[in-house]
Image 1 (cartoon, rainbow, N blue to C red):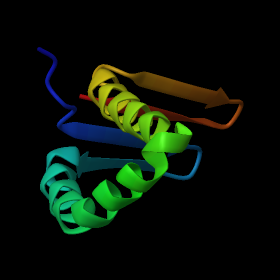
Image 2 (cartoon, one colour):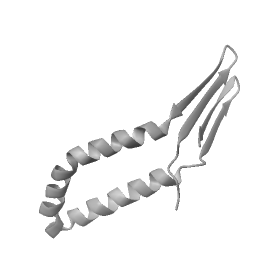
Image 3 (cartoon, helix red, strand yellow):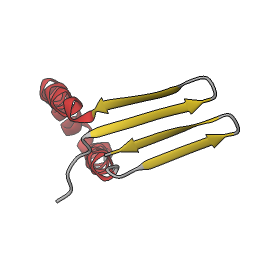
Image 4 (spheres, helix red, strand yellow):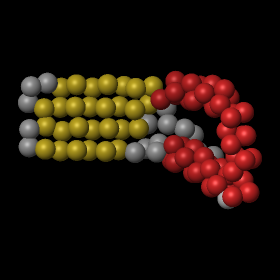
Length: 92
């Protein structure tokens, strides 16, 4: 089973300064769960109303794909380089 990403490290370096920032992504998971619990009755009603037209199934599959995509970004490393600096984004 894959684990969700825990931290994001953003490093920006150019001629004038060197800046790094650690963002704790594990703090976003409880916030997302609270929002999901609060909105779940509305989501369920919308899915039941839209299910006969086919849009309910599409919404459910989209939700599953979004969760799987979030879990899969662990280990992502993005490097952007220019002449006078670079940006590095790492998800741990």
